[in-house]
Amino acid sequence: MVVDDEPSIRDLLSASLRFSGFDVLTAADGEEAVEVAGRASPDLVVLDVMLPDLDGFEVARRIDAPVLFLTARDATEDKIAGLRVGDDYVTKPFSLEEVQARIRAVLRRTRGEGSPATRLKVADLELDEDAREVWRAGRQVRLSPTEFKLLHYFMVNAGRALSKAQILDHVWNYDFGGDAGVVESYVSYLRRKVDDVEPRLIHTLRSVGYVLREPPAG
Amino acid sequence: MVVDDEPSIRDLLSASLRFSGFDVLTAADGEEAVEVAGRASPDLVVLDVMLPDLDGFEVARRIDAPVLFLTARDATEDKIAGLRVGDDYVTKPFSLEEVQARIRAVLRRTRGEGSPATRLKVADLELDEDAREVWRAGRQVRLSPTEFKLLHYFMVNAGRALSKAQILDHVWNYDFGGDAGVVESYVSYLRRKVDDVEPRLIHTLRSVGYVLREPPAG
DNA sequence: GTCGGCGTTCAGGCAACGCTCAGGTCGCTG
DNA sequence: CAGCGACCTGAGCGTTGCCTGAACGCCGAC
Image 1 (spheres, chains in turn cyan, yellow, orange, purple):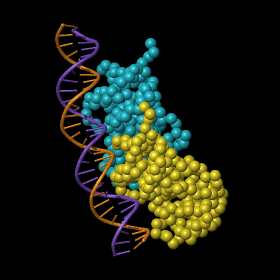
Image 2 (cartoon, chains in turn green, red, purple, cyan):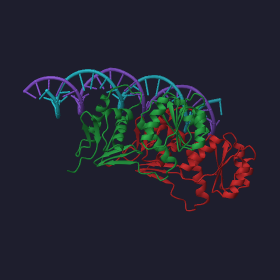
Image 3 (cartoon, rainbow over the protein chains, first blue to last red):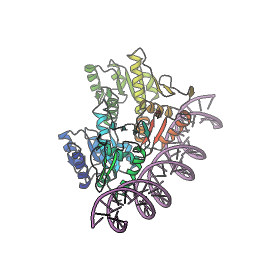
Image 4 (cartoon, rainbow over the protein chains, first blue to last red):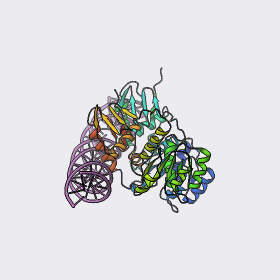
């Protein structure tokens, strides 16, 4: 369930989550959120802290589900205050990658006890979400946060062609104003760090975008 | 079983204990506590001394299970008075690390006689929960209580990336209002005391948090 | 062959982040 | 009541990561 008073944010999140296979309900304010949650018992609520009527923490208290808070970047104070164990938060502006990662983490913690392998693998490239480790051909590789998010996005969508706009939308914050040049830069960094051995996994599709995939045997 | 009249404390404790694999029941007052305990025979009861109806010690007398009391910090008097053998207490405000440590200690004493190894080990770093001793590369190290709790939390979660917020939630008291700067300070202290030799075990993950882990062979 | 677009890489400025140290407070102890 | 240890804060400083812009190279089109 997604709760935010700004329609743009609400739509952005619900569309992206639906696309990833979640069942999504929405609410525009605190009252509605409590009401809908009471009826539908969502597994998790993505909740803006700033709502027109009720305080986000107040809403959380009245809902029996783990909460992922959306909070302004400078609200360092409030963050810790309202968090119960099992909850988590993401600062605005966020990237879709971030939100989805946190959602999966919360769901994993609360429901599935036997932590399912959080390990992504493509050929001899491996990524561990928990430990934030990346391995290529047996060697560990150090990545910056953005590099890590980008590679994660590639690996989740391994074998699928991704346009730069798509990548920008998912990996960068939604308010990022710059152009797709950054993507090229970061793909370049990634190649140097994790794709410097055969077989090459990151392929550029001219005037389309990029793919991460194991080259066909033939 | 968790007994407290404040919902926030009740939720905090029950969620955190469930996450650690315990089966948790809750009660909001003394009457309910006695009633539920009679039916369900819990292995241990976490019990607030200040309840709206009955005194905590009165409740304890009517329950056939070891009790971990939650008591105000300045109630030095009451502490000793109500404690039976096998019981223990924690002062409010507490940290989750503290409560869980005490719970495990009580359960170990009462049920499991063959004390399970309370020794954590990562590379040449060892921590003995019982004796509160820490060893690095064969040398014993003296840690302050907070340093010890922090290191303990790191070692229990060895190999997992921990955010500063997460650390704050578990190692510091739940009412701590300050920011994550303290964590940095204490990590700094820990590094000086237990991580001043190769291989380095505490690694910072920029804009993510920290990990305690043995560096990879490669 | 040449030209234009597209992609890659590098260098540099800027901002954010984290480490450390010094200092102040509190509580305990002798 | 003086001394000490533990805890937290704040400021300064070095480092890292992020993004931009520009130069260079590749590739396909004509």
